[in-house]
Image 1 (tube, helix red, strand yellow):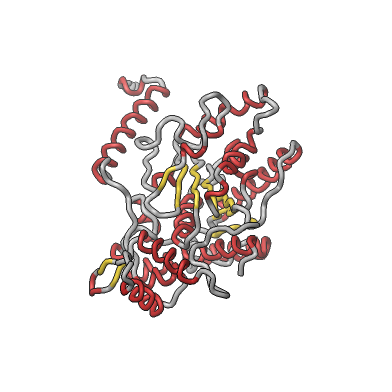
Image 2 (cartoon, rainbow, N blue to C red; image 1 turned 90 degrees about the vertical axis):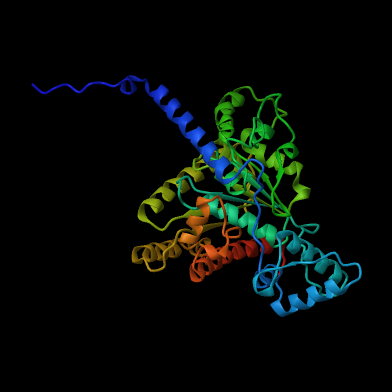
Length: 411
């Protein structure tokens, strides 16, 4: 007769106890790791930029940038002085870039045909709310949202990034740890909840280390909105915004402070996502060009259209200016991926973005240390690897910027 296997105490634990114990263990280890690599007294920052990078951000020729900086330094009232890096070349902090943009704008103000360096909206230009979404994890949604928000801020726009994902990866990328730095009622849930604990949205907005970029962080608390909404629907007062209008409503409270809002949606079609869909003026749907991912996206589109029909039937307005599919983690040498991209382009035509986000070790390795390509040091990678990834990311973000400017009627 076969010998019966002995049962250890661990194996007799109820599942809920096992999960709780493992969760507590993982949480403590993550906090210890975070303390080692990013002490509580540390503040996340962004690396200095080279003259060529600054020239591209400002839309100048590098030679003209040198002339402008020299003229500024020669002024008696000058307080602009970029540092000198390796090889006696100038390097510019993100604060230098913001100050230079403002000085350039002031020096050309009033000139006929003068270009704008500070990109603030003018009268008649509506706030643009870009939602990055897909309900399949790993599609590059958070990577897209984080890089887009940073790119637009570096380009001179006033940007609000909203983390709607309970996993809060966007918050972590921006140096805000959901378990350590985000307390109760510190997410957008605090501004859209249904009870007397609701607070003004300005109270949950935080500055970041990039001028012009603010953040509403996320954490697991966001799931409370999914739990509260069914009960609130049964007891809703007539003067209260219905669930799908709540994010649009609170964004409206700070509309004049921003040019673009970037929302990182959760990977599910719940009440938060529906509220983001209603608020959004444009959608970026990320898709990895593999058959399983495209099949999942098919389900996502079908369910989304049904949900939009439902909320439209009870009064939700269609605010959408454009929708684009963004191909992410694309490998140009992969034959099946190229076939899938060609299929998507043939079906969706102009709804597929011209530029794709390439798969790159530079992007994935930067993410391991909660950094974006705009933050990580170029020297950590081979030059071609980093430059190729950054060019791909900039092309994607520039295309989205162009779509925003088209809505505003800007050239």
